[in-house]
Image (tube, rainbow, N blue to C red):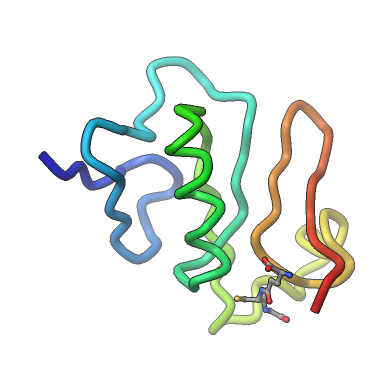
Length: 96
Ligand SMILES: N[C@@H](CCC(=O)N[C@@H](CS)C(=O)NCC(=O)O)C(=O)O
């Protein structure tokens, strides 16, 4: 069975998770994934699913330049998704 994730705002593009995995939270996950539906954005969600880690999905709509908002630039001044945040610790890429 393929599950469609309903976590996050629910306003982003459809998100298909691997069979047997679900990102639907039973309790609030500490990990947040800021991403969009691009290959670079999807690879992080695939890695989290493979690791079995629950996370909250936060859409950053690149076509609406949401990566340039002050809130997102505070997470990653390089304005790139994906970004992971875990209990205040931010992991982002500075590579182009
Ligand atoms: N080195 C990063 C690159 C990430 C990246 O290029 N993200 C693009 C989308 S696929 C992005 O956020 N572009 C928005 C921008 O540059 O403003 C990775 O491999 O994940």
